[in-house]
Amino acid sequence: MPKISSRGQHMPESPIRKLAPLADAAVQRGTKIYYLNIGQPDIESPAAALEAVKGSNLRVLEYSPSPGFASYRKGLASYYQGIGLNVEANDVIVTTGGSEALSFAMGSMLDPGDEVIIPEPYYANYFGFAQALGAKVVSVPSSIESGFALPPISALEAVITPRTKAVLVCNPGNPTGYVYRRDELEALRDMALKHDLFVIADEVYREFVYDGAEAISVLSLAGLEQHAVLIDSVSKRYSMCGARIGCMVSKNAELMGTALKFAQARLSPPTYEQIAAEAALATPASYFEAVNAEYRARRDTLVKRLNAIPGVFCPTPRGAFYAVAQLPVDDAEAFCRWMLEEFAHQGETVMMAPAAGFYSARSLGKQQVRLAYVLKQSDLERAMDVLELGLAAYPGRTA
Image 1: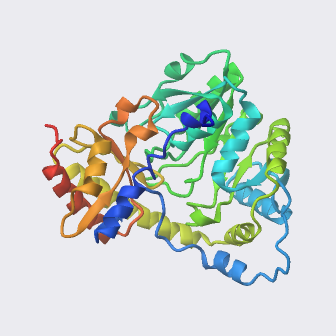
Image 2: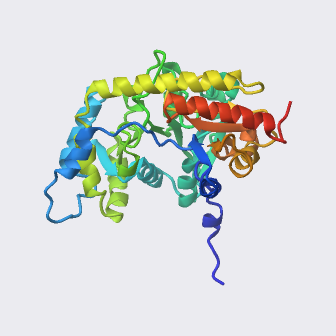
């Protein structure tokens, strides 16, 4: 029988989607599930984006240019200029989601055996992208007690080797919701310049920050122009996850020229989705103000309810729409499985993402879960009722 590649065997399962078969089986049994495992907002996409697709008069669904439509790239440059970033259209490559942008960025800077430093917990697919390239993720843990602040720069510097090529951060963070302070980012910049490293920043949750926090882009940090790479996406900003449109942005012409070769190899990003994404650029500020207020209220509901459950600790995130909670259980993944397979209250249960999958050192997240507050508040309240009862009944509950 043909042998599967070692690289493929070591690709991780998604902690967000791996329990989906159990959820499907629960639904077949008639159980209602509150899906807090995945960042799929229930917010309506901008009407202008949907109408642009409906109103298009294409007669031939052609390839688009490999870097994306020129008009869309120009529109994206204007968007970034509007938030104070020095970006031109030729600094942008449109990608099939932020995931492809990350793959292009990593592929352009990492050879097999090279290393990328990532504070953990981190979005699980980062490991998968590196693994697909034969590169190595070197993780540096942050702590739930600090709310998942950036680890000390000394801890990051301690793991730099001759094979280290980049540092990758998500800001605001997935899965933690942490928003990096300016002093943290400036310290990261200084380290990158000292050791001549790229800094990749996944900034797809930029619009969603709370309590006076500021989402500071790596492209705004003076001196980092040739080292900074911004990853972006329409998925969360406009609640258009299914559009699969993102982009890679950098002032480093050599890096972007290399990434363009990857873009040419996959031919082009999808056409209708670019039409929708370009139209979404005209979304008024009032849309984001309303969405931001809604997420803030949902966050407050979720965090308050979680911390009221005996034995549960959840720091208050200041961005994105995720929270990581420490649970009084022996094994969070076993608990998440049990909730789907064996527990229901009045025909309802809750699906969560076991947080161990967001760590390289899985033991660090063994008692943690990530919850996405993407449901309306009444559903979140009900989900917390069910979760509290589930924790009380779980046979593996700890003191």
